[in-house]
Amino acid sequence: MNCEWSWSILLGLIAFVLFSHRHRCHSRYIGVFIMVAYLAVCVSTINILQIAPLFFLGATLIFIGYDLLWEWLIDIRVKIFFMEYMILLVTFVAIQIVGMNFGIVIGVVVALFEHVASTTRESSMGRVLKRSRAVWSSDDWVALQTYGYSVDDPKIVTLELRGPVFFGSSQKLLTDITDEIGLSMSEEEIKRIAFQSPHASTPMSSLRARRIKSPRAAKKKAKLLSKNCHPQFVVLDFTQMNNLDASAATSCFLQLAKLCEKRGILLCAAGAIPRVEWMLRSHDASYGYDEEIEIKNEMLSNQSNNLNHGKLILFLTIFEALEFSERLLIERVTTKMPFERISCLQRGLSNVSGEFPHHQLTYIFLNVLRGDLSEEEKAAVDCIQSYYEEAEYQRGQSVFKKNTHPDAFYIVVSGAVAVPRDRQGSSPSVMIRSGAGSVQSTRSLSSSNLVELMGDDGHHKSVDSFHKVGGIFGYCDFLLERYRTFDAVAASAEGAMVAVFTKSNLEKMKNENAPLYVIVQKLLLRASLSDLANCTCHN
Image 1 (cartoon, rainbow, N blue to C red):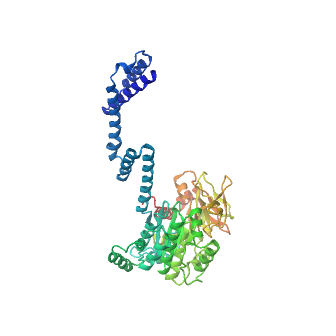
Image 2 (cartoon, helix red, strand yellow):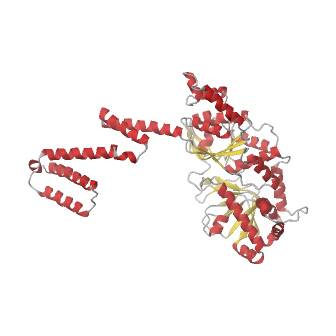
Image 3 (cartoon, rainbow, N blue to C red):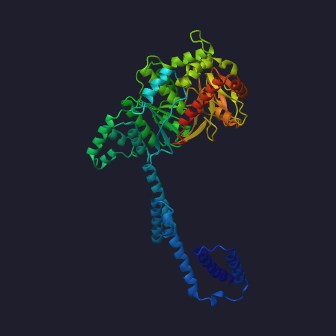
């Protein structure tokens, strides 16, 4: 009987709480009253069910059900999206028809289908404005400005992909990419893509049942796209793409590479996680590792006239892919390969040339600042030798470590400096579980990753970015006077030589040679603006 009392008073208390909530009464006396009333019912010897009329308890239950129904079906409309509200209504109706358990299962299934449909409708691709960190000569930089990154007809286009790419969203992604770079697909190409994978949904997929709904509109769109000039190099940034299935690898990226091949477009990809890299290589959407290195070397050495092979060329970082594209573009519009110019620059940095009476860093200052320097300022740069120190690091040796005091910033004079990726799951050695068993993926996407980086925890780390000749690094933490936020390691086979600008030397420069100090500040400002322009967090 006490149990019946408890249930009856509990219903009354719930109704009391609902009334108080509706009237926005939030006094503590309500809780005190409820506690006293509940204790009185529990210790009383009178049967509450014999005294209280049953219609009161029934009315209380009706009120509770009506209130919850109103809140879950009416009030919630302004707090959720339209499709979520439709799922809620479907779940409610299913519960009334087939019962609570199966009704909830039906609601979950409908929610899953809606999630897949909404994912396929949303675009996971965006165009970004990025450039490599390479230091080009004035002529090469002008060529890149005129041809590579022109406003009207850029020859180098960077596209950033986000989220997972699966069979439901692969065709939408392929359409978005082809529209963005101005590729028009013929009817035969669309038909081939449609029958390439049973999961791919294209306008020609309806050939299995019916014809295209509006062929005139399709031809008009293809005619408009054919008039647009497409780029010569397309770089796909896979950094934020966390998954890729087999259907998307073949029906999207493999078909995109073949479309680009027919139109003379070199398709590059960078930043792929080992899982995505393995999927692309295993489905022949990209080259095998050894073959890829040969292809890259042939292109850079100008031994291959055909730069398009119908597959993606993978790189470790987006900046390497952009530098690779920029070198090939400069080679097309100039007579001298930029790789040779960089080699000459490196030799000039090691030994002062008699032809150019400038010190080592003058080359870097002039090429980074370009037109920002007057003749007087160019002459002032020759006096920079006494305000920095040169430090040489062997391969794998740390330039500085994370969480250490920033006492200087650095400029790469020769070799390369790598920044390890300080994120969970960034190890280059990853075990991938395929249908045939586990596969060890240990090779890097980049031929520049010549050193295996070992973290403090004893695990291998992959590389997040490289700083080559002319690269400026460590200046943000130095200027902000905060502890280092990343590690820096000499990465190339010959190690790295860096120019070290300490705080004491900068103070000495400020007191003794103020114009030169202003030039150094301009250099740091240019470096920070370049990094900011390559960041898509503000887009």
